[in-house]
Picture: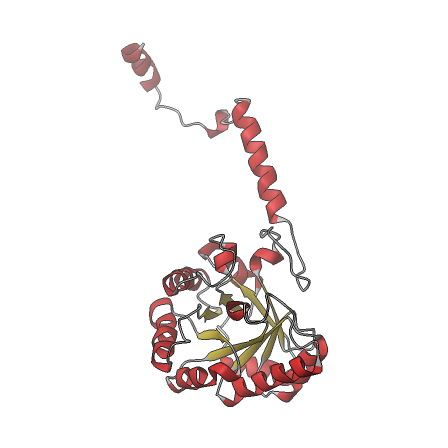
Length: 281
């Protein structure tokens, strides 16, 4: 059995240049697969809004949904470090609300840390949650919950001014006491600079290979999510094609009465079939 990693392990990995493998998970079976595959860390992301519930974005996702999925992931991966994602409006209104909701991930779902979006603007929330004794991962760059203010799901840091804002956000996250930070959809040179500048582990989702680790959405990795594919995604298999093909085969066999076959059927005990036929002939 592999020992569950801690934030100290991730800091040690950064120090020695060992990359952190990070993936989302939303359910018990996927969490089992992830732990068996050796993932260092799992995120129960609010991306479940699109990947599980079919929402157009992450804004409708609730705390109850995130907690429920985090509980399932914890059961499936008891020896893996799990991060719960704070959904929209679960931390923006006040530090007190932020701390209460962050604590729910630990108390109700057994998560090891929480993630929240924003840099300078949420520094006070990060500090309050850290002061409550909770491990925090910041999330800067493209922040989907506030993508409306960014003009949509657009790459950040492509101009000097924009890159400077991302760097300032990264420094604010670290100064507020966050233990890790996730960079989303920024140029690799900006990601590399931030990784060197910060003492905490820097994870990337579309931020270049020089960061301390990489995150992808599990439904993108497996080819299950078909609505769109970001530039930074690599599909490692085609689950959608495999499952659709299996379902087509099932439909064809049902229509042709090829399923169920003899080996899929139960039989009455010896001598009982004759009695049944006699009574119900």
